[in-house]
Length: 344
Image (cartoon, rainbow, N blue to C red; front, side, top):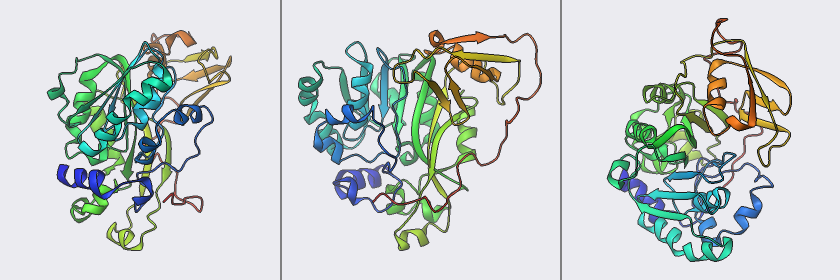
């Protein structure tokens, strides 16, 4: 699988337009705040972008960030501007051709933003221990449509937990299937390279996250994928694929379900760019100044992370009221509709 991915992303693909599906490219509208950041990134880096989502969570200034499968470095160079001169972003990738593009433009980055805070390492995301990165040293770990390409996702999640600080988060976009992908799809080189063959069944992903200490994964955004190539669609056997962005918090005390302790939070509106509301995930759009009831897990995610100083907290864990309303186990993604369109 490593050989397939290295061949596909190192030699077969030369630009975003070479992709045959909408899986590994982001068709969502670029938010206004991101456009100035992208304008400072070299055009060749942008041209070799194959991500499927936006992996720039808020409140990154001064943070140490690790990008798994950084490719040509688009997200690294965007995140580097968000963490600022006191932060650091390290990108890891196994494809020499992609890393060559990323490294070629480090001086351009230094000249454009005025500081040097990026580093690129050659390595495999399921063998991060070989890179001698300090355990518990990263505030945030990101990945953009790469975990699905790994043949050992169990090892990826294990090392992510090992490298994150307590209170840190894994914020990443990837491709998921609505059922377990059969072997003939998984072993198809093109479908694998297009981020479909290696996609996890969404419920298996949740189990894997729980196994490695990431209880209660939070879905922030998703979109159904449209396979417009008829031949590839036939080979995919009608499986439903979704691009989705999750955030996994490394926070002590999280439970496997959303439990009700009668708690609430009030957002102060103090995070740059989010003065009116703070969006934790698809179900937690917290309006500034408004008392917002939360489950115990949400309380801990906000209280025991870098977001703590931006909220007021109401209640404790002294009394339990059962399962928090609306905590279900059905398919979390939006269903496909006429709005699902290809990007390539």
